[in-house]
Length: 121
Image 1: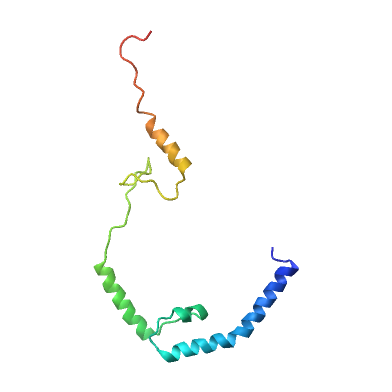
Image 2: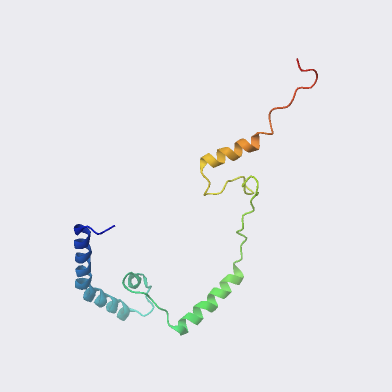
């Protein structure tokens, strides 16, 4: 796909627009970096990939390791393999309503109908 004349023209014009706007983007990047070296890199990330210097990276890793030790949570969901229900009686998010209906019907088959005691006419 994307071989039509229109798409080729649009691709060509986007490339020219990138060339035209590249100096403006570079100036914007330089201005952002001049203002503050500890600036949040949200604006910069739109333009270029941000690489953290190694001495800052070591500090960040040590902080992250400390946070991991402090914040351990049990996020594992215990699910019944036969019915696929979790401990709260919820089905998985990926399961659609048709599948849920089938499983509910399968679970309900054993209940409800009991043979009558005594003589059957």
